[in-house]
Image (cartoon, rainbow, N blue to C red; front, top):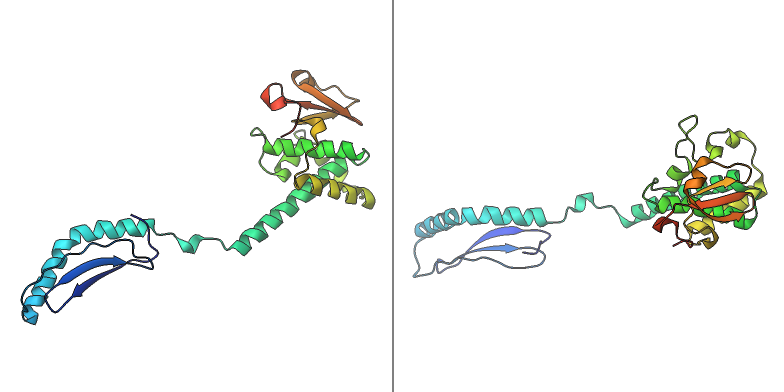
Length: 230
C-alpha cells in the first residue's frame, strides 16, 4: 500500500440499497468496497442495513486507516529549503573562519604551499573517523584543557595578539580554496605535523610524508597513510 497525503473514509448509499466503503485522497491508490443491492426498500430498512454494514466493517477499517496514517508524511516537521540553505551558509562561514584562523596562527609566515599543507591536514582530520566531524571541532579540539590542544595556537594565547591584515586575508583565501574542494596532494592523507625544531615521540609511530617550509608532515601507517590525498 502506498501512502496518500490525506485519507477520507466514506459511506455511499444509492437508491438501490447499495453501500460502498472507500478510501480516497489526493491520489486514489485503491479502495475496498462492499455493496448490498436489491429491490427498493423503505428508509428504515436502509438505515438498518447501513448500521449493519458499518459494524461489520469496523474490524477492517481501523487497522487499514491506522496503517495509512502512519505512512503519511509528516509535513509539519519538514524544513523549508530556504532555511536549509541559510544553515549551510552559516556552517560554511564557521568552517572558513576556523580554518583561516588555523592557517594564520599556525603558518602565516609560511609559503602558499606551507599554508595549503596545514589546511589539508585539518580537512584530512575532518574526514578521518578518529577525529571530530567539523572544521571548528578539529581546530579547537582540546582547547578547554590546559595541555590538550591539538594545535598550539588554541592554547598559547596567540589569538590575543593583533592580526596582520594582509596575512589574514591570505589565510582566508587559502581556507576558502580548500573548502571549495582544492586538495594539496603533497601531504597526502597527513593528519599530523610538527616544526623542524622538535621531534615528538608520536612521529616515530607514523609515516613521514613531506617536509614543507618549517613543518614536517605525517600520516598514520597503513591504508590511512597512502601517499596521495583523496
